[in-house]
Image (cartoon, rainbow, N blue to C red):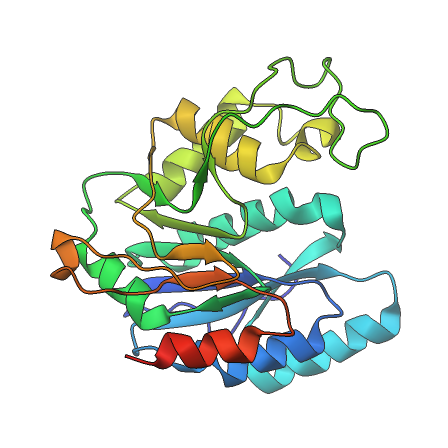
Length: 265
C-alpha cells in the first residue's frame, strides 16, 4: 500500500465501502463524492481504491486529490484492466488490518449508483455468524477459448469449461465474522495467486469471488436490489418487506436520473 486514506476506517466503522477507480477518473470520483457517497451514517466510510498511473502528471493530480479529500487507498503497482484482482486483494488486506470492528465490507466499481442507507440496513440484519457474499449472481458462464477475445483463457491456466456461480464484479457485499480473512487465506493457500501473474489475469469476478469463495466455504446470495441500468428492490421479511434499492450499474448519461429515482420514496 502506497498511501492510506486518513478518512478511512476508525473504531466506530461498521460498514466500509470501497470504489475501485481508474487513476484518470477524477470527474467520476467527484460526482460520487457529491452524490451517493455523501448520504450515510457516521458508522459508514467510503474510500476509493486506485493504483499508479504510467503518467507522472496524473499521479501528481491524484496526490493533490488525496491531500484534499483523504479518502484514497493508493496501491503501489501500475493500474490496468488486469489489475482488478490486485485491487480486491489490496482493499481486503486494508480492511482486515485497519477496520477490525467493521461488520460489512462493500466492494464497488465506479460506474455504480449506490443506496448506502439501504446497505446499512442490509448490514444490520445480516447474520454475523454466517460468512456470506451478497451480489447479483450469475451461473453457467462458459470459459472463453477464442484466442481473439479479450477474455480468452488457455486451458493450461484454467482447466474448467464452466465458471462456478459468482457475483458480477461491480458489486460484492461481504458479511459474517471472519469471512474476509477466510477468503484471503484461501486465496493465498489454495491458489497460485501470489506467485502467478497468469492466474491473477483470470476474470476476477468468476475466480476471486467464484472459485475461491467456494473453496473457502463462503455462501453466496442474491437478495435483489442490485441491477443493470434500472432500479430493482430488496424486499423480504428481514426488512419488513420494504422496497429498498441497493445499487445500479449505470452509464454517465443516466446516472443523475437513477440517483434521483433512488432517493424518491
